[in-house]
Length: 424
Image 1 (cartoon, helix red, strand yellow):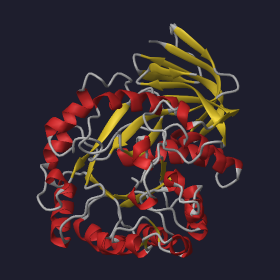
Image 2 (cartoon, one colour):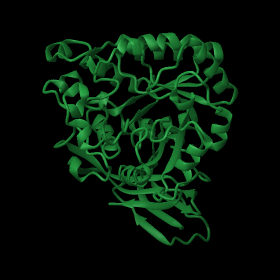
Image 3 (tube, rainbow, N blue to C red):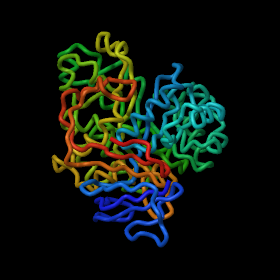
Image 4 (tube, rainbow, N blue to C red):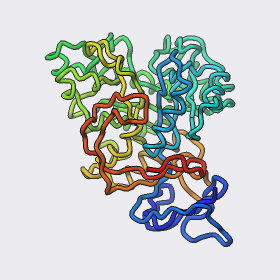
């Protein structure tokens, strides 16, 4: 489809652009930004006056379902939910369904006929077979199959020698290692931040040291092996400071924060609300303020949804027995725009953290927009507001703690690979 998008406010961080203009798309590529190309004829024209146009949102680290569960139909459904949220590229953790530890499983995810929404799927392959923590996968083959990196999701590696060998193998194949910084011994079956609230509620706690000890142990191995490392879902003030210092010292690392840590804290557990059961757990207000500040000083490079759709049954038990996770595709953009409303971020900073920053981590041309690039585009009305009603989510998961929240910004169009895949 040849497509003309006219009179939008263009916010394109990779070009340093924030101005009113036009974008022209043909054969899935951006052919012009600004002036109409000679001889261009649009089959479809979008009058985008009053709308903001940004590169398609890139969501780093998503689970389309739980490991071992049937999830074929969920690939399509969650893709539609992502499109409704303005997301055009999603990086899938290796435990997103059947474990992504072989070329066959990666091919199944990328080429299954149910993948009809044309969302760009960016697989993160397993670093060990079956996520068992000991036997390394064939990472070179996983990269060739389409993996943007490797990781072991929520499962620990057996020991530091396995970790070193895994990092060396990944580095030799120029693969980013996606790390969930968790010391499983210190987690000890906890389900809430170890502090005042967990003590009052009688919930087993997870100390901040579960995160910081893991970070401290991995940084020397990252330096030793030279591997590119991305720390997923930072949740603590001290952990963020450790990452910032390592970046200052020249470590080849990036990090993200999930949007829930920027709006919810341990106080949201006071009524044993299972919808606020997350992993890592919601931390203190001090941690939240530190993470917000880290977005401004660029020591965090991306904001993610940490999307995991769960059934109602998964959230109906006593708090410690419920599964951690939030359905986040359809609220990611709006919650980030709340940070703009609260003057935590400028609009340009917010778009950079949703698009260009995570796009650079994922590699390729995700999250950026220039002439010749793949036409992944999101259009939204920043002045529109909507009420969060999880029961009306497109996602299979209604597990959201934001029911009843007034949300700023509404996606009007999502374009992936030059195809219009969502219109409001």
